[in-house]
Length: 335
Image (cartoon, rainbow, N blue to C red; front, side, top):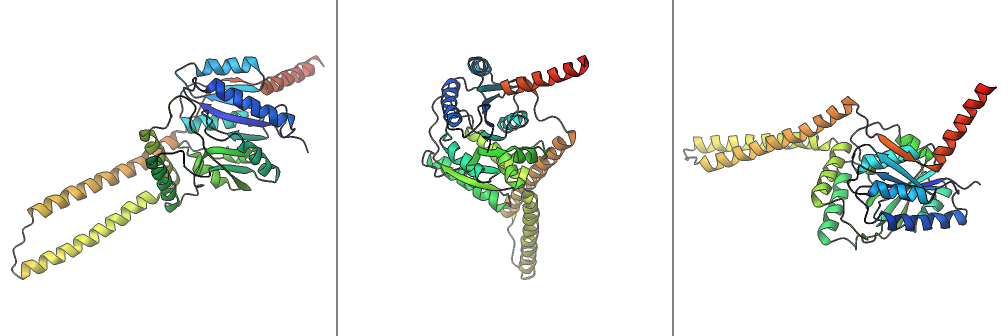
């Protein structure tokens, strides 16, 4: 059996502090896999520069100049982590048999790659890297993350618990992913929708080596909300259910008020009236906001704007294919 061409796809945004260390460790790992004939010698490490404001792209170019094992994908604009990851996967799709996506800080255990390749060799099209535990997280981050995964499942999303974007996908899975044209990307929820044969590899997540996390609390909350509204319509249904419940409670209060009025008891209601108005007003504004979020997503989908634009692609395999294609065209003309 021929060894597969593996591409390690690594999205990068302002990662100049860790990039060279990451490149060295990934190159060492890939070399081990090539020497063991687990993957083809045409395998590559593809760094995706997501519009970094520091010297990340310059360092990526330096890596590609030092060794053909490195590839560089430079996006024309900052598109966000999910779009950058998708851009990397779709760009290397014509050259790769298998891809493994991971973060540039190498908190994902690169030694788990061996187990992923074993699962793929056994027939899995997709292999999810799942955290064995969250011992490296603070209590608050662990609690909020696990609450998010449980909430997503409760809302009907088919999501892998404690899985981020550390996953293996073969060419068939990538081709299926390419059929999902949606602009509002949440790959953790979209990839499980593909189905196919899948498996799981458990690993222990490490501490970040250097630099700052690209997911502060505010961005994590935004990412979570993006996931909920991209994968489930239940928040809108929940608003309808709350509306029906409040209407029912209001009817009971109306009956209670009429009974008290008929019995001659004075109803002192200024405080309760004001509280009720504020409560219902806030609920209405919240409902409008949730509905508006869905309308905004529909607006973005309808406009059909491109999700990313690749400005530069440096890759030895791509150059070989282009040269081969050019030679064939010239040969036909000369003939």
